[in-house]
Length: 354
Image 1: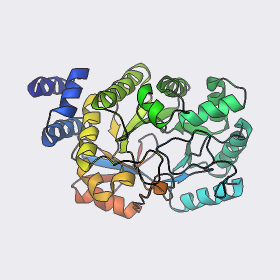
Image 2: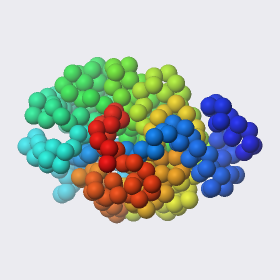
Image 3: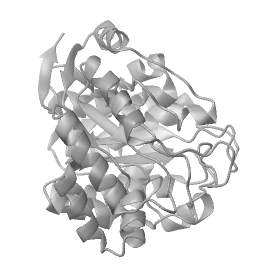
Image 4: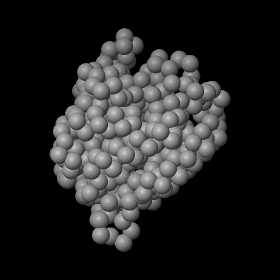
């Protein structure tokens, strides 16, 4: 089986479901790592590792979805419930700009009262005040929720948000794109097909998006492979995904609880992502959940991108994980592994080489 897969990859052919499952369940870590590393070298022969200077602004922690894996959300009447006002958000974006930032990742919960007008006005003002910052914000679930609250179709909602300044979407909320898994961990959230519909609608409008996977909760190897194949199929239709980012479930302070996936599990899934997703250029290492050293190792298991500097991050931190890295540390991490660090835009245009 290994030789068959190796020959396919050398010929630039996509691997099949049974081959992907074999790699995940039967191949050893170094075998799958070497295959993924070879794919990365083929796709990125210039030996660069990229990152973006960004900030994650969580505009509210009020959420009706109540996902069992989330330690961040709360009810509207909870003591710690908050909704940031525009001025606070602008101050955070100003700090991002002062750090040379180019990407604003804004996400909150499914707030019961925030209709589209709140976001339109916010995005218009942000675009006017900070034209150098790309608004890379709102998950597929948030888009669907805003559309429903505002009595709009999902495509109408996206069009209006785009007109106001929303430039691209993060792939958040994908978790595992298998509804049996979603029913167990996030029963109130949109199904996998709705997630895909939002991504395809965004791509049709010329908006690029990322795709993600949160694994290590209750899914099986079959579900991980299914997720990757569904992402690959959407990409085959639209070519709209810029990158894929797998990360591990963080159980602390969550209703779901349990154990987190091991470092070996993380590296295997990351490597499999690089091998299966032959039509997506970039695979991102998640130092936010894995830490700097594991992210550095991930660069030899298929990853070519270190994501963002994240001046602020609250959701993963609520689950007790609080890795932090400055721009200088990210540059040194890539350089220390023998790569050329480059700062990029949201859409992977190179801004500076270090």
